[in-house]
Length: 421
Ligand SMILES: [Zn+2]
Image 1 (cartoon, rainbow, N blue to C red):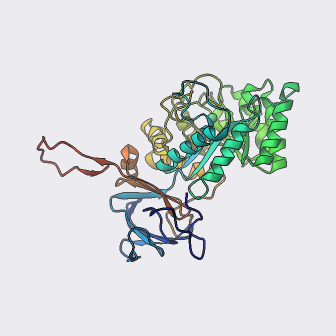
Image 2: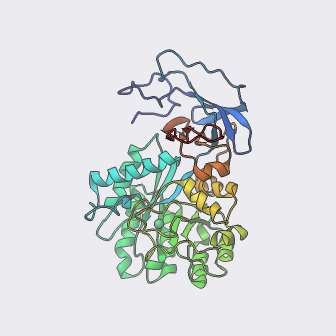
Image 3: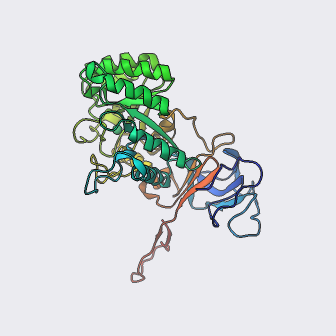
């Protein structure tokens, strides 16, 4: 991991070897197509977009001698790519990632867990998510061990991706909740970014919300809760209890949202993070039930701020779970709930908003959090953009190059189809 962001002044320490992704404080992304169809150059300085102009208007930015590693700036040709605000992963369970295939229960902490969490974050980053939020169980037999592993991974990932941790106590009310109450306060003191959990697992869901809100208020942090939404009356009581902390309240996955549930959530002014991949995650009781058809459309029609997350990355709730935000957007659009623009917004700016982060536009002055994906339109990118370039804090942090080839045995009157996919 090389050190500081590009805004650091003065000489940079030499990396152990040449890194083709390493560049100076100025980056020119040339000839990229925007979602509105314009083809532009984008100049990035430090962690911000400095200028956006018609293609060719902002260059040339000369690469200095010495190969791909340059000290004053880099120019990257993005012809054939669509340039978008970077997506964010709004709902992960990285401490459980990749455990579905393990032969035995994994360690509850330590270097193995840190490595798995880091690998999950890098997987998500490779898909484009420069900001990520993972929910982590605290208390019970685990104490803070899992959270400590997430915080260690968060530190290791600094400069590559921003990782947030949501502390999840199981019980918070009554005598049985005493340990959870103490563990929650300890987790927020250790550096958890938000308070969460699943109130439906506590005998007193509204009491759980009240205890959580009090702790979140003391720590001045947001709340991100699991909720099925299955019982509208209970949902309404919980939403009312959450009112004092809005707009810093997120609920998800709400996969079993009952009749009238969307209106309750709209009135409560909470954000929803749905999980289109399986509808559930390891934070909710029972196996995933899939997202009830029509839910996304109902939430959109009720104007509930809606983001979408991955939920599972090959964990016990979804052994085939992926962490690709473009896939979550694809599922929202393919199911007919949202158009391609709204679907992508759900995994990018709506997801960022759920994480309490400022919006991104490909425009001067906005944070340089960007995803370039092979494609000529948003619909095309959602249909299968494999080649990607990811910019976090003004720096290229990941690049995926997919090359597809065909055996030369078929002659068709079609344009040549080889090249990046
Ligand atoms: Zn979850």
